[in-house]
Amino acid sequence: WPAAGPKLLWEFRRGSGYASPAISGERLVYLHRVGNEELVECLRAEDGARFWQFKYPTGYEDRYGYNNGPRGSPVIDGERVYVLGAEGKLHCLTLETGELVWKRDLVSEFKIPQNFFGVGGTPLVEGELLIINIGAPGGPGVAAFDKKTGKLAWGADEQWGPSYASPVPAVINGKKRVLVFAGGESRPPTGGLLCIDPANGAIDFRVPWRSKTYESVNASCPVAIGKQIFVSASYDTGGALIEVQPDFTHKVAWSSEEFGTHWMTALQREGYLYGFEGRHLQNAA
Image 1 (cartoon, rainbow, N blue to C red):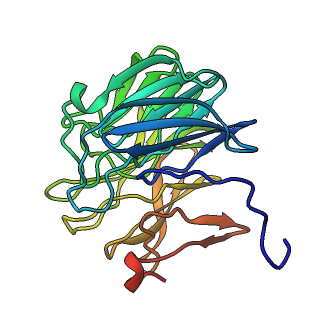
Image 2: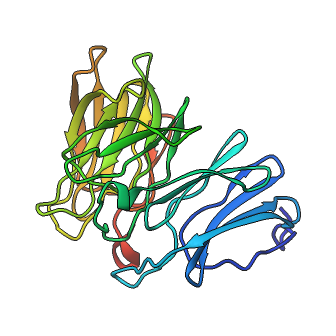
């Protein structure tokens, strides 16, 4: 880069929200809120020109006053886009035109109470499924929907609520798995790691890992490292490395109270984990 930094090609005035854009080819898809609507924008990545816009009403209000916009990022899968808003409104749209393919109101359908900061995880496309940590009371905690029709394919877990970590795909001991780090608002606080077979929703094992503080969440995505899985949480919790055996029995290889990531996910490179420990500006390191 030159000393003056990279050249600005275009800019876009966004509304509220925490979502990141998703990019596929020439198309950039962004989810945000303007007024009382959540908007899905499809822009040309090269110059910001709009291909299409899709919008729907929202009345979400953040109980803590941080932000009333959506949290989860759009997911592009081939010719389709999936977006999940702060109130749990799930839409499947065509990438080419923004036409609605199917939709579901997860909060209403599954009677999910508002979590601390609304619905926050990004859905995961795994094969023909769209997998979401919905955290419905009494189950399902994790739901898989047919990505083409929106029909529920399977539900898993009835113990833990929705977190702000997104489901993560992994291959562990040669087998496809989905890792979910569940745990949102509950008394007492509960949550932890779920290792799930995406073929049928069967749970291989669960590892409780959650702060004892009521006002806390699990928000850092699991990190798959071969046959090992790293999970981490803030609020005086810390991180742990889970080792998975060929028969999917497991053990905690090590844990550390000094590596508790909050909203960010640790990066693994050449045998080392990198991340920011703690929460808020005054106590993050």
